[in-house]
Length: 392
Image 1 (cartoon, rainbow, N blue to C red):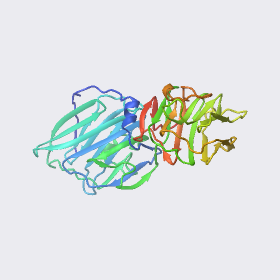
Image 2 (image 1 turned 180 degrees about the horizontal axis):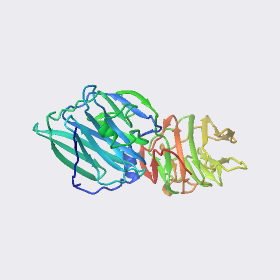
Image 3 (image 1 turned 45 degrees about the vertical axis):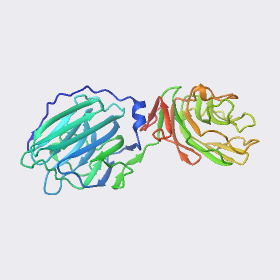
Image 4 (image 1 turned 180 degrees about the vertical axis):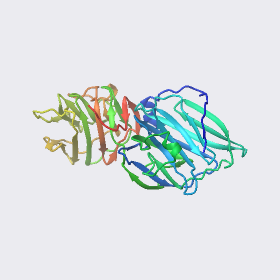
C-alpha cells in the first residue's frame, strides 16, 4: 500500500477561536480521560462521500473520530490530532490519502472546530476538504482501482479506537490513539455521534462536562427568564472552588432596583446569603475560623418552604430566615458569577459587581440545571466552558 502525501496550500490562515464565541455554540460537551476512553457507536456510513465534524479541546494527541476496516480489507477513515496538527486521512484500498492543517497549535487547550469531507466527483476524482477554525484546505485525488468506495466497519469510535489495533499506516502517524480532552458537536454524515446519540453502543472513560471556569472578576453567565421561583417551595444547589475571598456566586432577580432578589456571595472567605422577599433585605452568613476560599470544593444547598429559608454550606447549617412573603417575585433571571451594576437592586450590603475567580459546577435552580451551553444562557463573559480540571 502506498501513501499519498498532500502539499496543499491553505486558502486562509488559521486563527484561534476565542472562548466566548465557541462557548455560545457548544451543545453538550463531554470529556474523555484515561488510557482506554472512547465512545463506540453503530451506523452505516457513506461509501463514496463522507462528512465529519467535531469540536475539540485538548493538549495532546489522539483520534477524534475513527472508522476501522472490515475484516477482509484495510480501509479506514480518521480525523486525528498529532503534535498540534489536525489531519483527515482515509484509505479506500489504493493508499492513504491525507490532508493536514498547516497550523500546528491546535493542542493548546482551547476549543477548535474541525470539519472534513471527501466527495466523489464524476466517478473520476475524490475532492478532499479540511477546515479547522478559519483554516481551509482542499485537494483532489484520482479514485484508483477502488473507485473511491470506502469499506469500513459499521462501528464508529469517537475519542479512540476502543482498544482495537489500527492500521499500521495510521498507527505510525498518531502514536497514541487515545484522545484526552473534551469533545462536542460530533457529526458523521450529519448524524449525531456524540455522548447523547441514540446510536451509542458503549462508552468508557467518558462523562458529561459540568465544570465552568470564571476567569476574571467580571466573569458571569446570565440565564434569562430561565427559572420560576414563583412558588412557596423551591431549592437551589451548586458547588464552587476558589481562592478568591470576595465575590458573587449566584444571583436571582430582575433588572429592577426595587425587585425581590436572592444572592449567594463570598465575603472575606465566608459564605453570605442575602435575600429580599419583599419585606426588606435579610443577611445571614457563615462564621467559621477557616475560609471557604481555600481552593477546595464546597457545596451550597438552599431550600425555601412557605416563609422559611434554610441554607447548608457543606454540612454547616446557617441561621434560618423568616420572611413576610412566601414567594420570590422575579422575572426568572439568574446570574452565575458577577452581577452587572444594572441588575443590582437596592439594599445590597455584601454583593458588588465583581464575581469570584474560580470554578462552579452542578448549578441547579428550581429543578433546572443551568449550563453555560443552555439556550437560556443569553450572555457569557470571560467564562470557560467544560474545563477538564480546576487548578487553583
